[in-house]
Amino acid sequence: MKAWTEHGGRIDSARAAYRDAPAPWVDLSTGINPRPWSGIDLASIDLAALPSPSDLGDLEQAAAAMFDCRTGEIAALPGTEVGLRVVGDLDLPRPYRHLTPSYRTHAEMLPGSAPITIDMLDAEAARGGTIILANPNNPDGRVIASATLLAIARALRERGGWLIVDEAFADAVPEANLLPMLAPDDPVIIFRSFGKFFGLAGLRLGFVAGPGMQLAAIRRRLGSWPVSAPALAVGTAAYRDKDWIAATRAALTLEAFHLDRMLARHGLTASGDCPLFRLVETDNAAAMFDRLARAGILTRPFDHAPRWLRFGLPADATVLERLDRALGDG
Image (cartoon, rainbow, N blue to C red; front, side, top):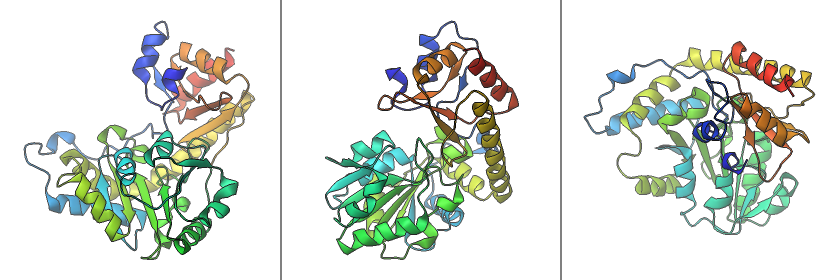
């Protein structure tokens, strides 16, 4: 299963490995909204002209309003993965630590970063340096209260340290949003993803928020045209679509509830508070992954936790029923 433990979305590899699986394949290996926002005609976007600074400003203002970013600055990125790698080059204070389990990128972006667990956060913050974590976390959906994170950030500040928070899934869990609580001098850098909640991961759009000096350094590295014209147009319109955002948050919560009930019928207890995915723990995780793949359903295994299997949210009742049948075939 190593081909699918790096990250989700490798449906082409699954097709090649499981050639007899029925089509169409169902990709439940990611935490991406299976019902994407579709409020703009992509053919109407001018691809002949360079993206304009005013359009970039409009996008960043729309995102700041969505995130309730009251202090500091916000900058658009060609995906949060790029932004995380750029921040890793900013010479932030050592020692570096990353909260585990979480994204593989978090362990790679800061040279020599040491893994820590959630029960170590207070003690590690007292040491200063730089800590990165995800909230909500991936893959277990754990949410750390914003007040707790704020206290961690201010403990780090006492030692000249920094907190980096990856809020890739926070659009679906708005109570995880730390930005409204931050003061201008809080040493916090926050990342937000566009593609997960809006279901448009291929657009490659994300954001970073934080103090002006850090944002200026990131902007210099990204250059004059950090994101494409389609990303500017789609992102701005989507963030301003308040009715779709409210309806989608409610729908995702309900659909995650239905997924939980179905998994429970098969003796699987889902963990986490993120409605875009569910993590289960079972002795049969490897066999279950293989059985589902033979049924044309790709899930997400983990090399460091062989008893884990993560399920993305099914797109509709038909996909949920197909998953139900495949789980019952074992």
